[in-house]
Length: 177
Ligand code: NI
Image 1 (tube, rainbow, N blue to C red):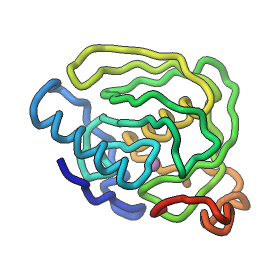
Image 2: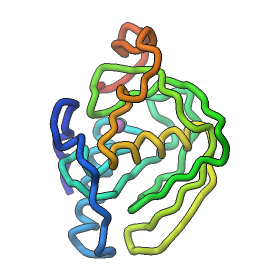
Image 3: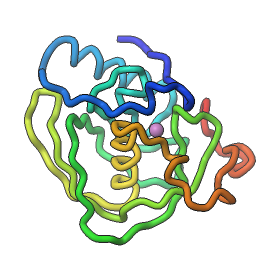
Image 4: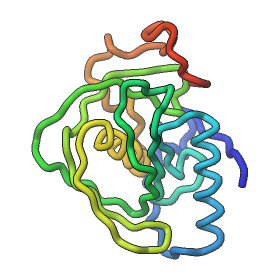
């Protein structure tokens, strides 16, 4: 297991459409997921998508109990999600602050669906699904956007609420970002 380099905005690999995972439960997939958790935890991330470490697969991980980068967020269960499909439960959207390990040092307000249904597979190929709202719904949308080559700044509507984390939130322990 190892901590991988996280690609930063501007790298064309972050703009690709990710490929579906076809082989589940392999040692290679296990090793990749272990590296993703190591990398996410080392950066205090709330989530990480495989394309962020240069692996163009439809694989995201997310979850935390407490996160210094999002001190007000409710806990999100630790989740490994492959080949996800997201469906909003209504047209309702809400706005909140987001950051991204591929866009270090910055935060912006992003509109997201308030609640959604998602389905996909775990690392063994077992299907699962959830209905979520709030920060859990936001994290899933953010991470799955990475699989379509979308970074959160592309979703910002109001650029007066986009800026440097240490200026916007003085005193917050934002880790490296
Ligand atoms: Ni991100």
